[in-house]
Amino acid sequence: MSDFFNKVGLYWQPLGGNNIDQISGHCYRYTDLCQLKNNKLAPTTIIVDLGKFDNYPAFNIKNSVAAVPDIRHLLGKAPDCAKAIFLTHSHPDHLNGIIHYIKAGYNLPNLYAGKYTFMILEDLYKLFQIPKTRRPAQIEIRPGDKVKIGSMEIEVISSSHTCFDSFGFIIKSKSATIYHTGDIKIDQSTYFRKPTDLKRIKELAGEINYIVADFYGIYDDGFAVKEVTTYKKLVQILKKHNKPKIFLPVYPTHTEMYIIAFLAALKLKKNVVFFGNPDFYGYLKLIQKYGIDFNKMAKNRIKVIYSHDKDEIATLDNNYVVIGTYNHVSNAFEATKDNCFGIITAKTFFNPLKGQLNAHNIKFVSVDDFPELQGFGHGFWGDMEYLHLLAPWAKFIPTHTPQFVINNVRELAAFSHMDIIAPTPQNNQIWRLQKNSCELVSSMPAKWLIAVENSGNYHFTEVFQKATSGLGFLKRTISNRRCLRRFKMYLHWRKNPLKPKLK
Image 1: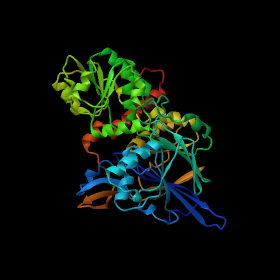
Image 2: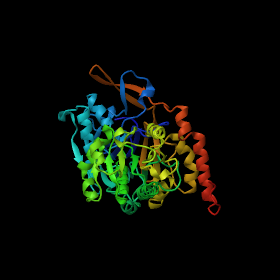
Image 3: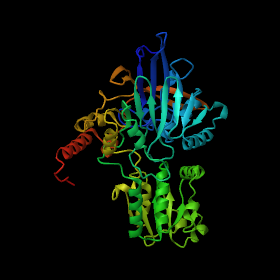
Image 4: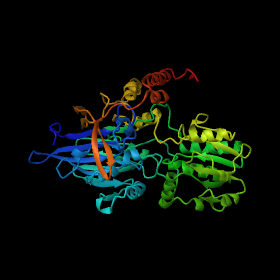
């Protein structure tokens, strides 16, 4: 065991998720060090999430296929190695590292996750041809479950995000209690999914010492847009632009938008064509297998078809919404400027489709016109302030956002009496957490492992983590200067609440 683990405490180590700039590859280590009756120190370690880092091409490693956090030192039979991996949800930046570790020949500890997460993982196993003998044991968990791992107890609570079975974890030890939020928003209007369990968080508020929180969306003020607001806006637009054929593309991993778009079409009795790329159809089949029955919801009020067969589309009497992930206008729809309209629900992902619609002179609206059209899976600054009100004594440990964003929000947080640990956490740091104190005990350079596949050989190559965002990326998103100005504005609004906000 490392020399840094020499005192009783609950140790937290971000291995991916507290990156320099672009955020993905989430992975967090929790090691509880408790003292036995013989005065020896006994460790219990779990890992929360094992995702992949998206921008691995920036490292210019030949034949690279992915990048993952380095957990090799936590794998094996030694006392301080991980006893379990808990998965918050099914998105690649939290899940897909599992595949690459298995492909590289490593054995992983037991996995704890929700039903839908395991359904996604099963598809990945098939895609990467991983035999059952190489797969780690799976234990399905649900909100309310309490799992005992060594000296720690992990309680599962529901979390509002964009997929089914999205969880947060209450991690309890004698040293401290931590609420690891996973990807979260406060929204209580989630469709066919359990929302963030605010009641349970409030019940545990007196026990929670730290909130390891998803700060991804704090660049925006107020609360993240509710799903019911997105639904109402879709209904409003469909009513206003009542063309026979509506193109309504949705981002593939945001399965909540499949349902919201379908319900909006159902409300106005417009037939539905599910149409898209293989990724979309894969997710569509999974949510149907999970238990979402679109035909049953239609109740003979509308027709639902799952292809773009021209003859089948002809039975819809030129009254339908095309829901799916696509970036072209199929000839099967016989689209013209007189019979079609588009509703674009993502910022840049569907830019090629916008070009196609423009080429056909088909009018459309997008998230630039109505930001609420985009599905929001991460809370805004108001969501974090609300969590602080629920658990006012807890210190916040920010994750899922670039370091400079946290550095810039500190003055705003202080005004709201929100205590954010300092200095801003970075990947591979080790923090010792106790109920009344926390300390940074180690700060070493962080690494990514680049998965390389060459002629059937699969192995990892180490690289040190570095900034991978180009200047263009920062100009489009959240540069340091923009970030600072934005938070200064939010602070001004709070200090001068009676003054009107400038638009």
